[in-house]
Image 1: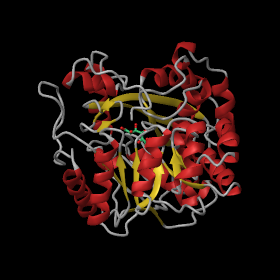
Image 2: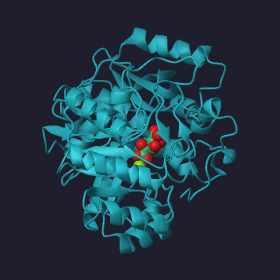
Image 3: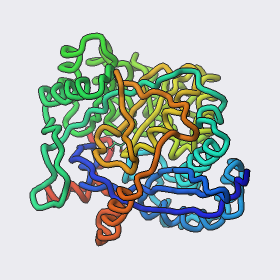
Length: 429
Ligand SMILES: O=C([O-])[C@@H](O)[C@@H](O)[C@H](O)[C@@H](O)C(=O)[O-]
Ligand SMILES: [Mg+2]
């Protein structure tokens, strides 16, 4: 068996995204992703996926070239090689990843966000070569299915008039009744039993009313609200007081460890995060100060599946819960999330996934949710297959774009409907 990498193919694509609202604006009609194919001397191909914005492509391209001749089994080597790839300082000056509401933006985090896609591709190739599923390469599954939650968004019925976009059949959700109707569709279509509402869009009292309506419609079901750090400490405490009896956790109510620690100390509701703790460097301060009770790992920016396992072990040590964050990802990443989640003991919360919002994919067969769960496959590798025609079609869309959609910008997308819109300063309420 020859595990030497002989070819790496990088294909940036644009995939349809509905008009989902968040505190920064609205999702663009098409969002960028990068599909990675790593091929071995024996002709085995592994698949990976990560963010496709320019700043990631800039790193992925030189990185891919340096992997030729290395082994798909050398996962540690990926990090060493990536350390040698320069990150343009301009990319990290702001310190905050404004495009995706995903916490600090450091050079290392950018590197890890790229390495992760290649790690998954290498694991997929290695698993196929050895006849083992990815979860076996990660030490073996401790569960046969992974539970996901319904990811509710305030949304418009369609993208603004005149904007080229795909239509969706979810309808609008702009008030409590709309949110409950969307939640019902999620349960009918996928069987989810936990619900997360993306907040920070409307004044807190409106979002409190929406969560109350969910609690009435789905009594006893785990509920979460995530305003992406849009609230002050006082507002966070007010919301926690109003919703404390129905929330499983409050996600990133306020921005930064100081504010989160203050809210956590007084709220009486567990706090989850995918913004306050998104790198290993942020863990000591946040954990020792009790700023977060659940970390939502995202294998893309934590540096892959094995780093997610390491994060889970650290969380366990500190008595902090762990679950999974998600952004606009496709089936390759959902498969990767499912494999790693299957290996993490003590995964007590249903994981997030945007996948139901992504009507387009690059797989021959979409992954499915059954009773809100994805079955953990024992098929070698990730257990997914690339649809080359679909990949070419979605890549063509990327090639045809004049550059406006190649970097996700929710504020720019919002300006189409509301000229003059600027990313709101935080705290917004
Ligand atoms: O896609 C969105 O609008 C989400 O708000 C996303 O950007 C976040 O990264 C995320 O899903 C979250 O849980 O904060
Ligand atoms: Mg979040």
